[in-house]
Every structure is written in C-alpha cells, then in structure tokens.
Image (cartoon, rainbow, N blue to C red; front, side):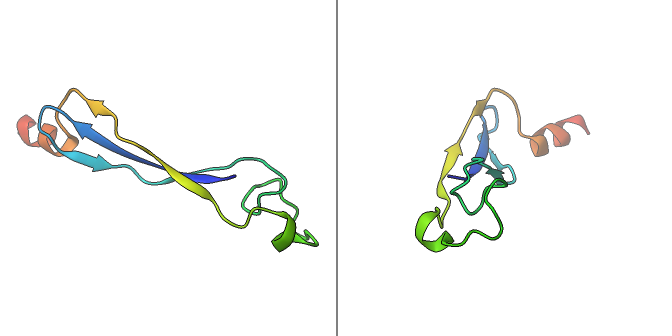
Length: 76
C-alpha cells in the first residue's frame, strides 16, 4: 500500500524541531488505487483494491547541530 512519510528533524544543540514536507511513498502494487500501476478503468476497484493508504511512517532523526534558524542567527 502507498503511504505518507513524515520527518521531523530534532536539532540537539538548540532543542528545536523542524518538520519536513510530507512525502508520498508509492507502492507500485496493481491493487492499490493510489499506485501508478493501478489501472484507471479498474472494473471492481472498490471491492478488489486497497481504498486507503497505510498509516504514515514517522521519523525523528536527532541531528547534532543547530537548527537552520539558530544557525542563521549566529552567523550575523
């Protein structure tokens, strides 16, 4: 099934978190209605194909530096 990926970078030197734009991950399964390989004219789509995306994957990598905002303010 297709799903959304959510990433929130946590910057350990300042403690701030920054959300990245959500990214849709395509599964390439023919029976997933969100997939590029799913036929547009699928005859029994609502009975035979996935009608929803999988629960979003969420990642929060911890990065050992300042966030972009704090980095920009220390340069001035």
